[in-house]
Length: 285
Image (tube, rainbow, N blue to C red):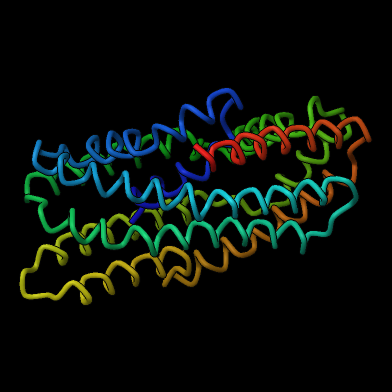
């Protein structure tokens, strides 16, 4: 289910873009998602034609129902930024984002069932090769040879995102991030094992969805169960690892925010407000 998760997150990830790109990206989301799916499955013209209207319908539903939820969440985050926050509050905001993803997952299940029914063996093989390529890219990005190199990459990415939110960090704040990363139990092997498990799970589900003897409800349940295994891995080692890592992340967010100046907090609130304005405007288009 990894590619589906990436597509879902695409609709939630506009805050990582330049604010000027949000409107263009969101308004073209059906085409972007169709392009992404086609890259993974190499659709036929008939499959593309079948996918186009359902993605437009999904987009219309998302604009009407989900964008208001994003604005509400941004309001909460804006208020959080005016004062110190606890790790518990940071984790609550992360859970809200997960809830948005789960809502999309429920809505997209019929689309997965409909499209998967048309996939050929050749397309599944194409998909498998694409997953293998992405796995290699993931290893190159996140699984460096030494622990020190892994920590350097994570520091660079963490600092880059934090400075998008708060503006320039001072040396004390960068040190705080370094210490938090050094304290965390980085283990790419555990994550990579979960990636491979999800790939195998996804291929198994897609193959099962082509079974003409299964009802649509049975197929929908297969997809729902796959999404559930994404949220709560059947691998206890991975689940324990990711739960611990999430808690550490929440603690780091709370500690970093507590260290910020009034100027940095104002920068963060303005950053949130910019996206809130974009999402509010997009609701009425």
